Length: 270
Length: 322
Image 1 (cartoon, rainbow over the protein chains, first blue to last red):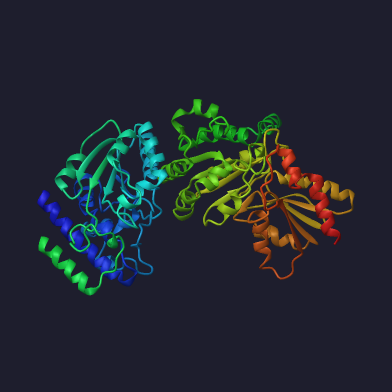
Image 2 (cartoon, chains in turn green, blue):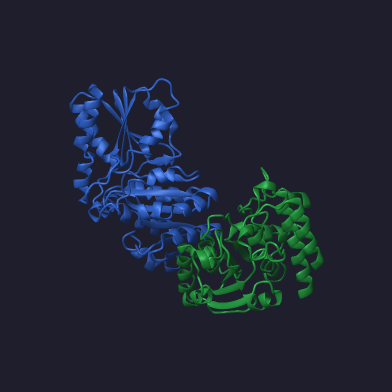
């Protein structure tokens, strides 16, 4: 099973590179999408109750991608689920596309909310989790944040409320790739120790290797009486050597040459 | 259905717009259990003390965190609840403005944002607490309906309307306790349709919120000076009743009066309509001048900004004679 999931992850990386290349000179947030690959794989292909044929089903688990710039990883998962065609995939960041550079709320695609303005997804997730409890709906809410995004004060406003309201139907996943727009988080505004911060805000907190699907499944399937925070240690640009851990690939332009190099590397994994 | 009786109207006027809001909240939730009330540590201020005890499942105090409150309401609205979000108008609007843009404007999530004590009524607390910029800020964001009731009865009507409106709403509550009533009996309220409260031949005064009452009094004073003024209650600032503005163009002067900055509020909205009309009368914008004045009590501040009935009448008379 883990092998199958790793194969899906590899295909998703190819999808992302195709999208980034298709975006052309406007560039694409390829680094922060690649770091999310295994997290998205684990959620969409194992953990979440999500029916691609009926993405608006009220029983679905809710996934909120608060770090909206990583959306290529979500589109890639949808492509692998058969929800997005090849042609559609390559319309990413083109005029009139459904595939915005930051996700745009779309119930047919199962995109819960629009994002792009950082620090807002956890509040939405808390609102969903409270409403689900009120409606006695047992669905779960997953919110993916970036580590840089955790600079936003509104994240912590929402975190306080989540634990105060004992939202045990809420899981926060922090894609801790240690790089934000300008530079390494260490050189901009370090949040370390990030796990201790979430713990002190009342979350059941786990640290995992965010590229190890087995570890991810283990913590994602764990039950808790509290809201859960998973600090997923990831590598920005994971899978493409020249992008890995390189702040320049937060948002980058893929030339034909670089695209071919990257595809060859991923192909090696396939 | 809430009972609109002379006693209730008197009681709501005494309580002011916040108290009237609380009474309306208790009424609407009885008919629709999806209605929830959120507040940022202002439960009693928002008139929701009794609501919070009667309907604890439908009440959420999120603490002093307005940005989060708007986002939480967005999530709830997506899940089919009808969330009312309450705090001081200045924090409701500007503290959480990006959340308002993204959740209510961009995603059109049907959050009902309630700005208490809009305008100058809490001016004794200083410029941090007055709200003279909220209409301008929210009006510039697409897709948000803005309601600005003239008195406590209209506040009740606006809460009922906000439940019915499918999209996002900003409900701007101005005035304080002992809110002077404009309406003394039940009447038809339709969001987006301005109400002519008094007919007049010479000029048209278009007012909103507390300034409807002051404009009616100003109109009376103007009658004594031989100026016949029509008074229109523009209770919906967006979408604006464009026809009401167009029909005002047959008067010799249009005056807008609001307890909000002269920039970007009712005056701005009316001026935007007039800009596209070839034959139009002079438009006088009366409101809070573009300034923060020293802290002071409500009536004192209204006077400082020239918004008492006599001052409104005088300003109109001066300009009309020109």
